[in-house]
Image (cartoon, rainbow, N blue to C red; front, side, top):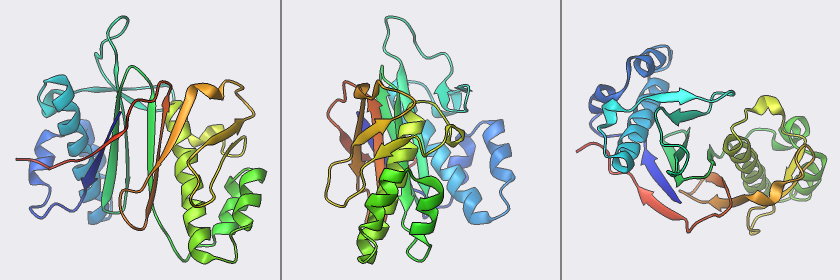
Length: 232
């Protein structure tokens, strides 16, 4: 299992990155109103292509993608049947991105930059399960633990849904993750699926002020963290 860290603020801009994108990706990039959002999108998706090209022995520009029922991307023409399928997932927040890569098992990754001033407890009341809300309220008198716990839970929940190939429309209330600082990441329960023992979850700290999580189907191989060097 590989997780690549990608910086989205290349000193030389995104011209080289733009060149490897598909027409569809360029069209999506051009729809961003804010320049920094466009730049981050271009840098993240170009990095994803470069990373996957290294596993497939193909040029980054030649890769094509398909989408699952809920929009999760996959490599078009990936081997099936007896050949392990290359699975991947991308998440980006602020000027950082993570790309998770696995062979033969679904994988999801989520990255969240901490927002210190938002009302974390109010958002938890809207989106977290009762068990998670109780755990977060226990941290309310320690602001840093509250922030850390909120974004730990959010990243774990998003990564789980992405690994399953499902969007947030499935809802965030019906399953529970742990969130107390210092605890190993765990999926505690899913009231819509009793077979959660096939999923493995780990937390990642890619940089100060970020929370991240990776979820993959068992067996969860050794996790290797790598830095993407960018275009030559």
